[in-house]
Amino acid sequence: MQLREVRPSDLDAFFAHQQEPEANLMAAYQARNPADRAVFDHHWNSILNDPTVLVRTIEHEGDVVGSILVFDGETPEINFWTSTKYWGKGITTSAVDAFLAEYTKRPLTAHVVQDNLGSIKVLERRGFKTIGTEQIFSNARAEVVTENVMQLD
Image (cartoon, rainbow, N blue to C red; front, side, top):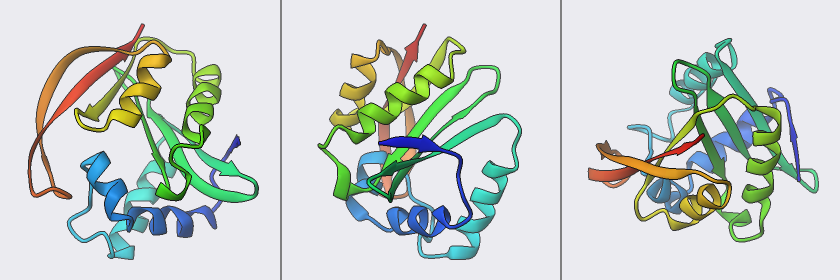
């Protein structure tokens, strides 16, 4: 596993990852129309051109398997997305470790749906603790879900 800067060609893989129903359910995230490439491109253009965002591609054995980023605002927040093909292989864990070594500003927060046990486990093993909860509407689930607000000090 390696982290590297995002290349324009990575966006095709990120778009394909966004089409994975199981990943959308676990993230509780989904664009209103996840197949709308123009909306996806606009979203990623905003991320890549925002000086307050540090974003990396997660690569494994030459394949783009996901992305990891932090929105470096008043309270920095980490987000990551890994293709379902690579779940359970330790790749996300390695990516989070490498990213946390690169991005050292603390405290750092994360929002994770309560039933996303894989992501919660990754974050807890890195020292994140649940400091609260929030209710959000999930387009992917078409319902309100509860997210753990987690923090690394």
